[in-house]
Length: 512
Image 1: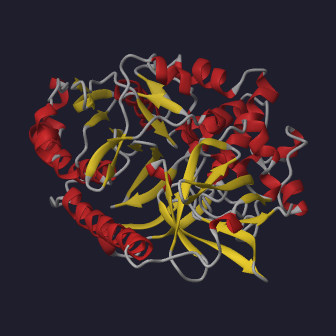
Image 2: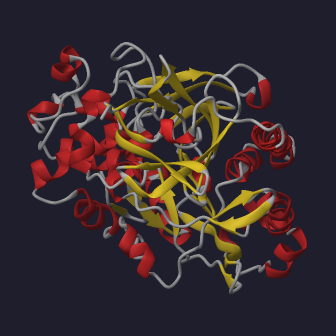
C-alpha cells in the first residue's frame, strides 16, 4: 500500500508571504513539504491540507496528496473535509455573540428556552445552564450515549428528548466528560432566540462575514460537492474507503464541512481577537468569552508535553499553557477524517491540519511540530514519536482481535444453547430496540436506529460470550455477552469501538 500511495502523492502550491518570510521558522519555510511527504507515507495518509496564519497573513494554505485514491484527484486548498467536533467552537462563538446582543445569558437555565428537556437527575434538570452544556460538566462520561447519537435516524430534538435516559457517571458540575449532546442542546436554543436554525445562523453570521464560501453544515451539501475528500481508514494494514456518515442530527457538535482556505480565515480572526485586517468583524468580548476557561479537563504531568501543566475547556475550545503561551484548539474525528484547528493569541498564530483518514495521530503531531518551531524549541520529530505509540496500539488491537477470532473459529467453540434460543427482540432503555436473528448459520444483530448497521456474532465457547464483527469498520470488533437464567436467554450486553462510545449497553429480551 505504501508504494501504491506514493504513486498518487501530489505536491501543490505553497503560498508564502514574502513580507514576513524572515520571521518564519525554517521548518515551515524550508522543510514542510518534505516533512509532509515523508510523514504522510509513514502514516498511510492519502490526503491532507495545512494552513498557517501569522500576524493577519496567510503564510501557508495548501493541499497534499489525493482526495480520492481511485481517481488520483489531488487535494487543494478548497477541498472539503468533514471537520466534525471543530464545529463546537462555532457553536460556542455563536452563543457568545447572542449573549453580547442580550438575547440570552450563559447562566440562563436551559429549560428557559427548551422547557421540555429533562436530564436523568431532577435537580440537574432544573439547574443546568447553557454554560454547563457547552463546557462538558453535566455529569456524563466522555462519549456517553454517542452510539445512540452517531449516524442514527433520530433528529436533534428526538435525541435531546432522550437525555434523561443517560445516568450520570459523576456529580453535576464536578468533573469533565466530553458530551456532544450539550452542544446540540445549545444549538437548539439558537432558533428559540433568533428564529433561525443553527445551520442558517452559522452560515449567515459566521461563514458569510469571514467569506468561508466553501463551508457547509449538512450531509447533503457534502455529497453534492465536486471537490470533497473521500474518507479512509486502515483495515488489516490497508487503506479502505470509509463512507460519509450522516451526522446532521449532531450538527451543532459535529456536522461542519470545510477546507483550509476557509478555516484559515476562522483561526486568523480568532488569533486577532475578532479582527480581520482593519475591520473588527467580531467583538473582542465575544472571542474572550469563548476562550475563557470554565472547566478543568485535567493536569498534564511530564511525558511528551512536559512544557504543559493543565488542560481547560471554554465555549467549544480546549486551552492549555504551552511553554508559557496560551494555546487554544479543538480536534475533530468522523468516519474517515481527523482534523484540528488551533491558535496562539499571544503569537497571533493560527494552524489548521486536515486529513482524510481517521487512523492517524499525525494531525495532532504536525500541529505541535509547527507550534514548537515558532516557540524556537529544540527540534524533535513528534510525528515519529506519535507513530511509535500508534503502531504499538494498532499491533495490540490486532493481536486482541486475532485472539478472539482464533478462539471463535479455530477451537471448535460452540454456543451453549441452539442459536434459535438467542433470537428475538431485545430492548434497552437507553438505545431502544435491537433484533437478533439467525442468518446463514450465524447470529446477526440489527439496530432500530441504525438501519444500515449490523453485527455478526460467533460463539467463543464460554460464559455466553461471542465475538461481534460489525459490518461498518468504524464500530469495531468487540466481545459481547448474553445472560442466561434457567436455560433461557434474558439479556444481551454489547459495546462498540471506543472511537464512538465507551459505554456498555444492556438489552433485555422481550418475552413472547
